[in-house]
Length: 76
Image (cartoon, rainbow, N blue to C red; front, side, top):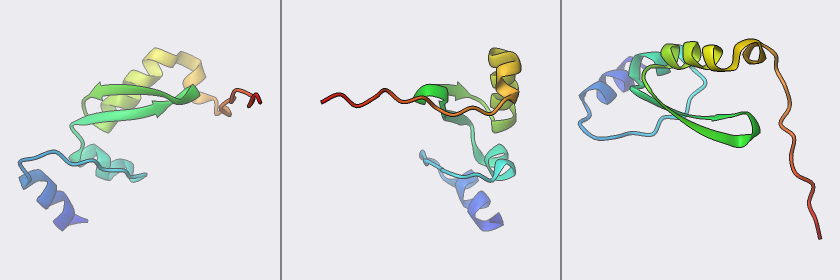
C-alpha cells in the first residue's frame, strides 16, 4: 500500500481509485465523485474526511440512518 500511495503522489496525471479503505482514500484523494442516495452523482473537491463532513452537513440526521434505494418499477 505504501508503494502505491507513493506512486500516486508522484504521478503527474489523473487516476480513478475505487476503494473502501477510508484511510487510503483520505491520503491519496484530492477530489471525490460519490454516488449518493437514489443514484445521484456528487462531485466534491477535497479529501474523503472533508467529503464526509460536508455530507453530514448537507444531509443532517438522514446521513446517520442507513436506507435502501428505491428503484422505479419496470414497465412493459
